[in-house]
Image 1 (cartoon, rainbow, N blue to C red):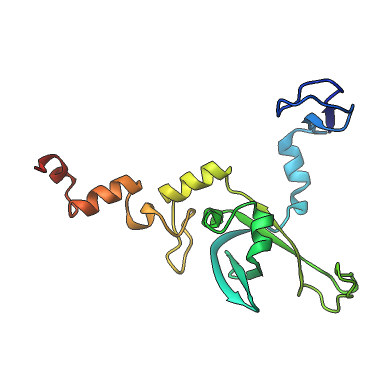
Image 2 (image 1 turned 135 degrees about the horizontal axis):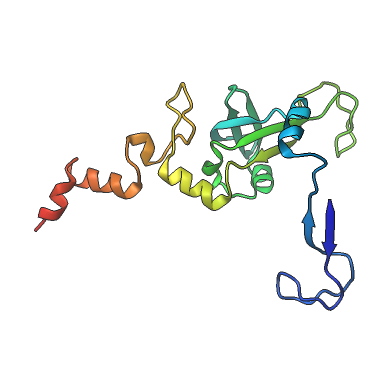
Length: 193
């Protein structure tokens, strides 16, 4: 990896002037040792076990708001809503767009120490961190959700999201509203007095 830093006096991305040399990253570049195709084959065993998120639900327990994140293998990761907002960088009203993205929870192992000094006595019981891999950028995930590329029907997941107009057979919210308003016959739209 090659990194270029801002120099003192140089104008930065936010319009401010840099006041120290070699502190803030200007650009970075990755130079691969081999072509990507070869690296994919050689490192296939190094892939992380991310699972697709198929459902996000909320509940109140132990005096706080919590989140359950169900993955494609039906395993659920539980954490506080506040922590999930921090880690996902999305507030509760936007988190629905993460359905279809990927999660890889990390748990403490036996013998490790928690931040409060407690020693962990069982593997994979206490959540350390969740790794999220977005299916797209935030704007793209909003668009995908609104257009409902696919849906989850309660049993199977169809490469998209479990809500939105696609779940009802429409290509957009506008089309759905038009059909619903004119009882399935959009030609009535042009004949309204």
